[in-house]
Image 1 (spheres, rainbow, N blue to C red):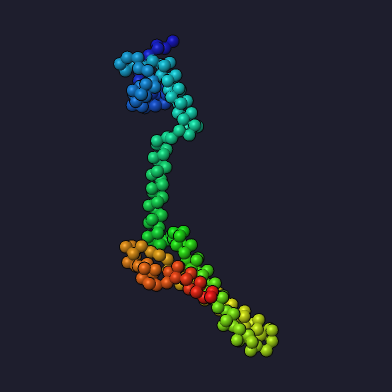
Image 2 (cartoon, rainbow, N blue to C red):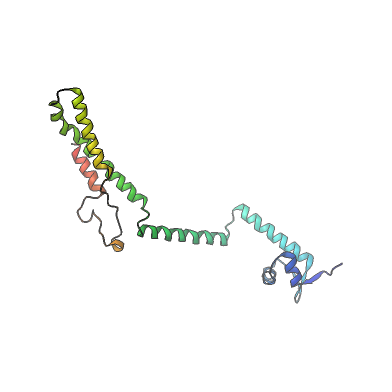
Length: 187
């Protein structure tokens, strides 16, 4: 039968830990130390099993794990830095810029479509047949859609990065300007 105390090397191999980790756990009170360089065999195994059980319960109960939270924070910071780099390379566009571009395109479409009746009414009146009127209307609609197939949408950029300025502050027509133009045409 083996003695009740064992050297640190035996305890480390038994628990599948490094000797340094055994010393750390001993300082934390997890593994009882019998005397200089010797550890209580049964107490060490029981203490380490109790420690592992407590760690598992903390993980299941949702208690914050500092190492896991720190790793998650570092990943989030790295993801944010990568997204910023993609924006600067112009390989990724922010969702609010996409939304503003769609608003501009749809406002332009609305304006152009609402202008069709005024533009086509005199021409439709001169058409001899219903088929000619239908062709006239279809041609006008296709022209509007072809013009909108490749709209000239300029995404907002950071002036410090690209040396560009915001069209709204320059007096140009940004997404809000297109909305205003669409509203004024409704009257």
